Amino acid sequence: MRTGNYEASDRGSAAGTAVTFLLIGLGAGTLLGMLLAPKAGKQMRKDLRRKLDSARETVDEWTDDAKEFAEEAMERGAEIADQVKERVAPLTKAMRR
Image (cartoon, rainbow, N blue to C red; front, side, top):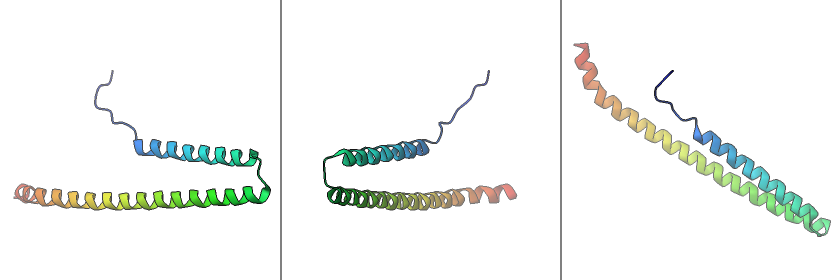
């Protein structure tokens, strides 16, 4: 029997998948509700276009937020790497002697 530390799978990927399916479900439900609603064709198309534009804006905002988060994470990672490099440099020099 194997023992040891096991790492959890990538949770960010699962959350992204869940959000994707949620958005697909919401979009399909909205579209179906609008198609079954007793409205004139012109009014329905106008409402659909308005909802689509709203959804695009929301996705664009989420994309921008995700890009900002990734950039901040990269900057923090680079700072941590620099700090580790500075702390390890004296040890490396001592070991080479």
